Amino acid sequence: MKRRIVMAAAALAAIVVLALAGGSFYMLGYSLDPDPNRADTDSAYAQLYSRMPDMRPWADSLRRCGLLRDTFVAMPGGERHHALWLRADSACGRTAVIVHGYKDCAVKFLYLGRMYHRDLGYNILLPDLHAHGLSDGGSIGMGWNDRFDVMRWAEVAERMFRVAGHESRVVVHGVSMGAATVMCMSGEPLPAYIKCFVEDCGYTSVWDEFACQLREQFGLPPFPLMYTTSALCGAVNGWRFGEASPLAQVTRCRRPMLFIHGDADRFVPTEMVYSLYAAKPGPKRLWIGRGSAHAMSYADHPVEYTRVVADFVGR
Image (tube, rainbow, N blue to C red; front, side, top):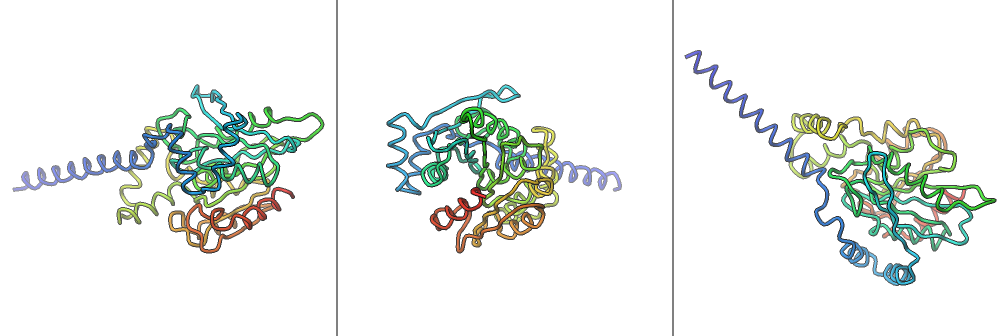
């Protein structure tokens, strides 16, 4: 009898372990596998124009004239990464590096490129993050290791747009996962030419965001699946969900940062921005997009959004 009980318990434990292992592999792939159509640039432009029809004349004219250009660089790990760039004759060393969101690409964020270039007179550079767009990579990094890639792009941009007699001044502006990337980057030692940051609807940590989505999409608590999936991510990708923390990084940031969030954001809950803002020492500003869902603050309030950003980076 005891032997049967032990065997049944062992079988049940094996089933639980296998179920957790299978669930962890599924959740890791679900969360971090790249978009299989990520390199379809025509589709990306079509989505941009569908979302913001007024973007078509501006972007199409630049592309026809060959002014909106591609560049590729080798990252320290040997990967080949891509970015779009556009020079502004009146920039005098002012450059915006604009970082896209989760499973997006540089093309889809050209609306912010237009804001900086047309309305603020900045050079612009928009990178495709690791495993996005035309950049190499087999697994999405959620902004953690991406912080070093964006630092590399900021270096490329400063060198590309350097003007004799003018100080190089770079602002790094990210949305959603791009905002998390910007905040993670902000806690690292930075070159003097990076002057400030703009984060729009970024999350406090990968753990917090994934736990929120696990509850919203699957109705599951963090334990045990978050713990096992995080451990698997550590084994496969070299980082765990808890360590990928924009909240921890902004506590070390001394450069000015503008925080933006929509007050109707359910994907990255609005309350996250208040924790991030409170944690950031030094110069900072907070602006809330009234009635805006996730990553919609510019689309809903383009004039006010532009004014707030222009005032902030102008300081």
